[in-house]
Image (cartoon, rainbow, N blue to C red; front, side):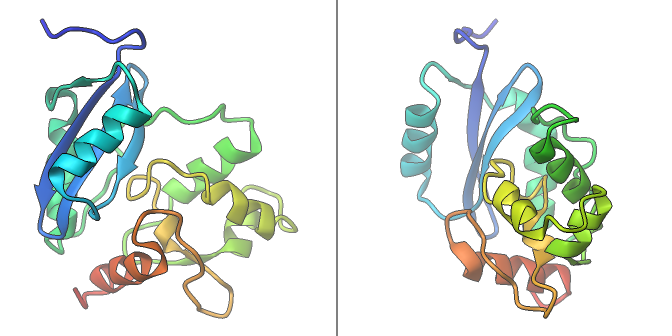
Amino acid sequence: MSPKSPEDLHYATWPTAWGHMGAVAGTKGLRRVVLPHYQSNDLKALLAWHHPGAVLNEEPFLRFIELAREYFNSRTVDFSEVLCDLPRGESFTGKVLRACREIPYGQTWAYSQLASAIARPDSARAVATALSKNHIPLVIPCHRVIYADGRPGGFSAEGGAELKYRMLQLEAGGN
């Protein structure tokens, strides 16, 4: 049996075709995903620093690791089976993240479209703010949310808008 942290947190890092990525999970599911950007040792140090007491343990992530590798190898992936530790469902942010999770692979929605999906059509800016705090990118595919005029908009993950654009291109079949 592996040692448990005070919150029973685990983390792992693994290579993908785009570089190393990592994740942290608790008993309710994923809490954080770090997209490919860092070197392996730097990524492990970052996750351990942000989540003191988390135990390095790849086992809780095996299916997610498989799916993430498939994704970065340009295969259509559905992350809906991956359990996430999200804010309460009735909270604004919880509604935004759950609705964002429903955006299909290869599609994009405008911030205003996502706002309408949660029955708050005048809240596109608040939707953008909620997405900027998404700690589970890829699984909560905030990279698929763009401006109404087609511009990609921001991306809070390391790698910023350039990484968002690359991910959108990958999903469009342009690798």
